[in-house]
Image 1 (cartoon, rainbow, N blue to C red):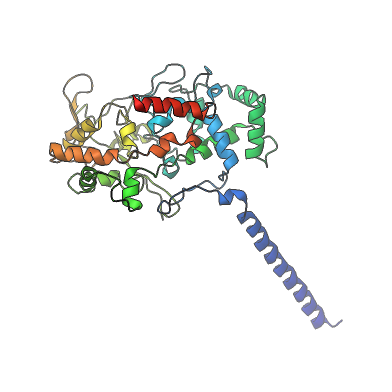
Image 2: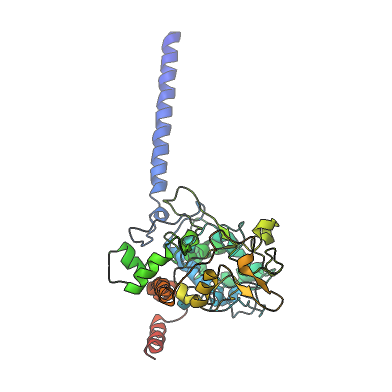
Length: 404
């Protein structure tokens, strides 16, 4: 065969192999793209974008259900009587109603439990740690953290795995949720399942949502409508830190071009006249040691805010009325005691905390608006409830409470 013909034949062979490789790649990509996890049904309304999910922990209904069981599993605590749900109670929009949380051993925390509603849309977790950004990693803190103790399982990792492996229900659930894993019951998969369940705790069915996004003009009262205008006014400035679909300025989702993260000093304290906060609660400063980070905390979502009292990171304000008074004054004044100081003079506070004029009638309107953000669907959804309790019994107890 002439040399030129051999070269042509070799070129044709290489070209054929190249084309086959492309076809195989396309076929493989198509097959992976059609995996069940990529088709997870979030059951979202059209206006709500999908959350961002880590590539190494895709959603699946099996993993969600496993995470739900683990979320309510009391054997994941040192006392066997404490679970994630102890500090994140569904009826309270996954908060606990306490000023500061109390761990399994009775140790008091420095801060209150944040709501888990729409936590899938939060690019940064906890009140003031800009380094904790993934639910999978955050789940390790309550389970194994020692300062303070929450679930108290530090050093008891093997105990957890033995307990789960000896439970036939969990053996089946882990095998279903992590079918590709030879040893499915491990700490990595425990936190993945917990995070997957937590991402489903989505709140988008409040009366305000029906009014603003579903066209139901009668879903909220006239007072709430007036309160919405006040909330979004430059006079009150609430929307700067509590705006957007989740009423917070720390947000991420699939339709957002970039992640938004913010922390604010609201003038809650000013112990030394230079902006100091209580030494065990200094906000982002605790992590960065940057002086200007003193007293800076994440603005939490205001969804279901009527259910999540007391307020602020340390639960030091009891009611919504008092919260509004705090912002109306441009900061809190503490007249005596070790934390005495004029918060409105805090040199480190946010530029949006300047105080404002507000009549009592306007204050009532603003509260009516905030109460319109309560999502009964979140707090009554059986998919979010304790799987160890019969839903019929739960509904019966709830009806009795509501009729009293």
